[in-house]
Amino acid sequence: GTTKEPTPSPSSSPTTPFPTASPTLSPSKQPSDVPSESPSYPYPCGILPCDRERDLKQFYSTISDPALFNNPSSPQSLALDWITNHDTMTICPSDPDTCHTIQRYVLAVFYFSSEGYRWAQCSAPSIYDCDEEIENANNNCAKHIMRHNSNDRIGSLDTDAWLTTSHECNWGGVACHGESTMPELAYCLDQIDFQANNLAGTIPDEVGSLKSMRYLYLELGNMSGTIPAAVGTLGNLEAIDLGTNALSGDIPHEIYGLSSLRELKLNNNKLTGTISTQIGSLDSLRVLNLNRNLLEGEIPKEVGQLDQVIDVFFSYNNFSGQVASEICDLQTGGSLEKLKVDCLREVVCDCCTSCS
Image 1: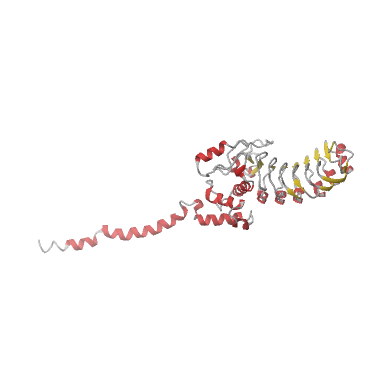
Image 2: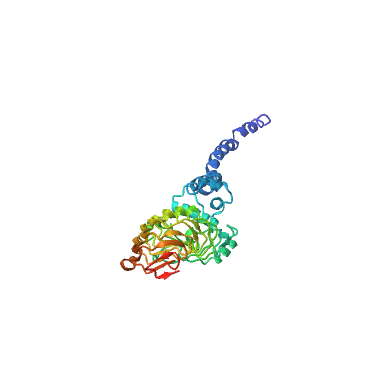
């Protein structure tokens, strides 16, 4: 008995399956499983946060001047920071829905550029990811848009606060194209409507990226600076109302190329310069209101080419000369009903319906 007992104990220990399985299986699975799953979870978009931030910045540099991202307090930097770090509706650099990807950023730029924190209503929550603050912000947003003929527009009755977790089409003062009338533009921005909402700051160039927009209403605010030339690249625009603000500079020549424009209201601002002879290209125009600016020169006879225009207001400017017969002829050969000019002062007008 004493010679056989020591031999099985040392020999069986190294040959048993339990110890050998531990070193061969455990190390081989650990390195192969963990590194492959780590980058895709829990990071948004399946990439590391630093890579996502880099790619988003690169993408939005095609919309904004990249130099603006170097200023942390610029509207562009603030919008990029919100999109990247605070927006729970995660935008991915590879998102095929470019309409959503672009307009959510552009609306964020507009929010910061127009000093959204001072808006009368629909301002963003003070804490982006706090349910109570989001609810408070939504309760302070009842901004409905001006109704148009499109019946199925998305968000036309919604009034969520801006920069909240919902789709941007559901933010107050915003409507998007519906799925039935224009399926190829579904959920693409159709209207911004913020009249009398205490808008300030400036209109950012980025609005020129909202290619599907038809209606832009920003009247009755305190916006300053110039009208971006980029507005003139929005070929679908049917209405622009920037009246009663503090906008200055010339009327961008690009605006005269908007062939679908039916309503152009730039009244009660500080616009200077002259009216371009290209105004005759706005052949869909129904309403033209340039009252109470600092415009000068003669009223171009090309206004007489606007055979669908109904109301034309040029009062309280620094115009001179005489209203051309081609314009007066619109009262008989066109649709003109109202023509208001400074004919009590510097302008001679034989057909004006009202003089100032």
